[in-house]
Image (tube, rainbow, N blue to C red; front, side, top):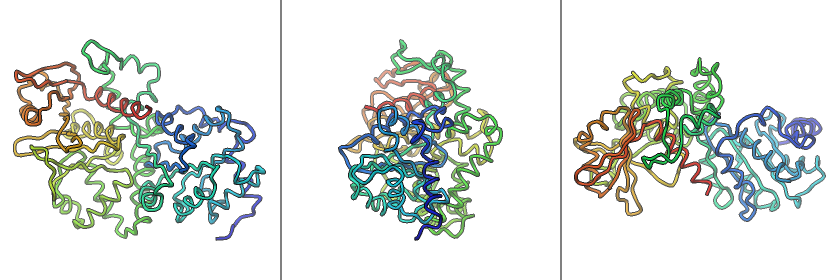
Length: 473
């Protein structure tokens, strides 16, 4: 498609989007924002020169992808990269409509008197607004060997689908999920964080909290508002989370992104299904039950599952039995929102007295584990028993398990953990985590099964921090 605007206007816009060519600094608005912990993971990928691949940054809307790119750009400049060898282009800019990636690249060359042999970093933001972007990007990677390409997009479903189809060997995917509880605390507490969570206590746990009541109050805030940086930091937005999160994050995916990607005609049907899932996040659901309750056929429900998972809105957790075996054709499963604040935005902010509050806590803990993609999780359920989280080893045998509770009852009455005890004995699991409201401790049964009790908020913090820090090394 030919350029619809005067080349001079387009070049003027490119200069506007790259102020560091003159100032050597990114826009102060972005510079003031605190870095997400994922910055320390993305930056090394961008600097990797031995592997000639484009970095494809994926994730749901409003998790801070664009801000993360600008922080990486500033780090490149601070590390000595010539600012004019760094180019940022937002593909959703109206002036760029109808212009291919390679044409934009050559306009950048003209502005800086460089060419394809000049080492450079080129960032394409909101890449999904370009039709067949993955084909164009693959061609650039193959043709421009001295340039590192980094792209991002909010229509995560498009990125995930298309990069899997066409980017084999050319793209490195990087997923930016919603905030972990650990990141949420770092963003909102700063110096006060150390007063709530400390390391190396005498119990032998990784972290402990000298003020668990304060930590629990922040955990409740995280459950309701903690998935997205802008929501976490704005009391104005928190006063009406539905308007911001529902309209800007959920509705744009359900009403625009997914219908345009997959040709969905009945948008109300998709919206009805997602609303039902959000209300029952953490519940065991059957395909038949979901179809009947939402009014959507089972085959369509299966398709919508694929779309909603690709868009990073839900995570489906399969069921195993008491022996640890998977079901070949299981009609029962659990569905979790990828962040609990999505539920609060659709309905109302939760309180501890809500009947489904325990499931929201489960959703939060599962959302921390969603930050690792190498360890699939399951839940176990059989007649008379259930385990909330189970991990299988390489031999597909249960290796560890967790019971998620928002009460101290089972610390006081460990004998009531009959399902957990039976499961651990069957699979020779010597210790299991049991979360509590605010109690920490250890109990070992007479036959050698150890229960490690940890407040759910502290466990949530620990998982999120360990996963992110573990990825650094």
